[in-house]
Amino acid sequence: MNLDYIQPDNWSIIEEGFNPDHVKSSESIFSIGNGAMGQRANFEEQYSGPTFQGSYIAGVYYPDKTRVGWWKNGYPEYFAKVLNAPNWIGINVFVNDEPLDLFKCKDVKDFRRELNMKEGWLSRSFTATLQNDITVKVTSKRFLSLVLDELGVINYEVTPLNADATIKFQSYLDSSITNEDTNWDHKFWDTHSVTEENGNAFIQAKTLKTDFYTCTFMKSQLFLNEKEQHVQPAVEKSSTHIAHNFALEVSQNETASIHKYGGYTVDRNHDKYELVNAAKSIIDKALAKGFNSLLNDQKDAWSKIWDMADITIEGDVKAQQGIRFNIFHLNQTYLGTDAKLNIGPKGFTGEKYGGSTYWDTEAYCIPFYMATKDQSVARNLLAYRYNHLQKAIENAEKLGFKDGAALYPMVT
Image (cartoon, rainbow, N blue to C red; front, side, top):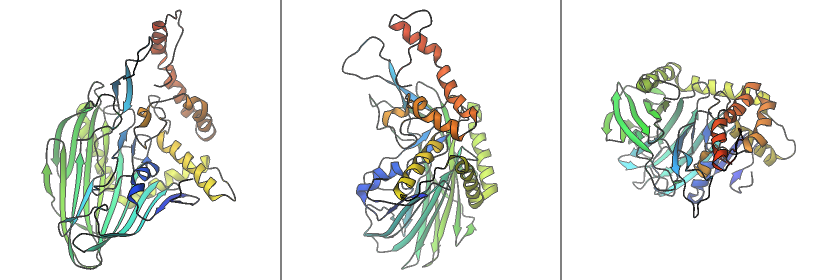
């Protein structure tokens, strides 16, 4: 890794020290995914500095009408764009009603962020002094499950260090999101319903034009010194947002924490009328296992990937870190189970290039998967192209080609 603030390490990407100028680039570098969905490394708590919130669902896109300075025969009418999906990771934190916002804190010390590529999780820790002079220690860890690929999991802990304090967690879902990468500033999502049931929350939304139906869901558990607290949350709800507010009285040096289970169910995999029920099933499975068991499953799943895919470089830690970073992103972007999916040039790190597929897949990625995966994975990547053959024939006809000639675009 050549970024000067990234610490050399054989198995992890590590950032030490808080610098607002690094936030947006780190959100990309520390992104996580599981083949079915991805998440930029945004802070869970609110952040008023420069940031780019990004959550993505594999295979869910919008046909953005092409915008060029000139038009030629054969140009596509639209450019498919990966969509910024409703945000499920949000956990705002208040300490004696003062919001935790690293951009506004009086002091931030011991900031450390780690993307553990060997085990497939992202962590963050820091000590911050808020505007009300209360100092808190914060740690968080999250991952997108490879075993339950519609599920993401967060553990978020707050410890007041210099006073007793009321700690409030505001765990929320938000569908009032937009894409930065859009040709005409169109709205991409239509929120259908925002509901709450037995401590679970759901936002059902549909993409415009492509009509992908999704359900974004969450369930939160509250803990004090690792003992679960059965507290009824105060619910706030709007047409695009739902929040569960939990408050705990926490003594100095005690730790309040929240486990959040969230993610997406999509009509690519479920009946569109059963998305909430599918989400409930995922939540039930998550609660039955709990955070630690799910994390162990994650470690085991990544261990199996690395057993086949790892490349060892001796004598150069940065080179070792870099090659594992590439292997990690290839595996968290595409696992090969769905022939309707492919590999975007930026993976799940952002919207650039629309998340579309280039011929880099065939040139560079297929050889990697052939060497490290079952043959069905490379076969699915080839099937993706085959399934576009009829459209490629129609595209060739626009330019006067006949008799089954096929013209694939550079980007699909």
